[in-house]
Image (cartoon, rainbow, N blue to C red; front, side):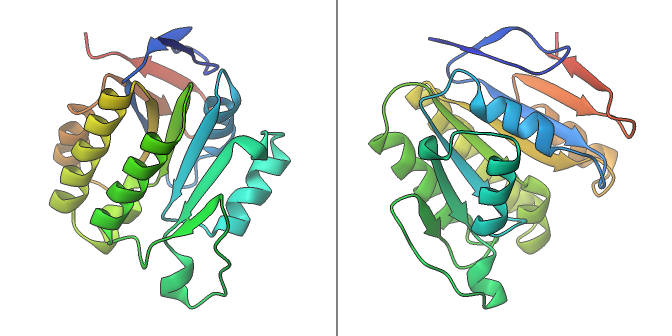
Length: 194
């Protein structure tokens, strides 16, 4: 099963099981790429948010006119920050961005309980590495990519290129089928590693 990609300079379609890395500057405008990825050719999608609250994710989806009825949100920041939270059918929580086992299990649960074309956005791997460490974030990313392959889903993983050294960036690049590189000026390039 192929998925349409509505991302400039990227392939028109990618096969199920594809993991894409979104490299971006710290102040980069990733919302446009993220929401275009989520709203195109999708039956259900999961946003794993280690950076913003579920409410902020909902506001982003609404602003970019993404169908929220298809959305499931995993909020890993509200519990740690002591914000009020209300679990619903489409909003779930883990205790903090370093609860990587909890994040992997929530993604597994989403993929096992939803049918059709499924997408997962992880925003962001950088935060996972900040709260846990790079090695643990790398291992969790590997597990998430294996789940995508197993269920024929596709994923977009955010990684800040200004926070990590070149060795770390190259290490993560090696995990992915394709790399979307967002420049400071908003320009987008794509590399399939070939």
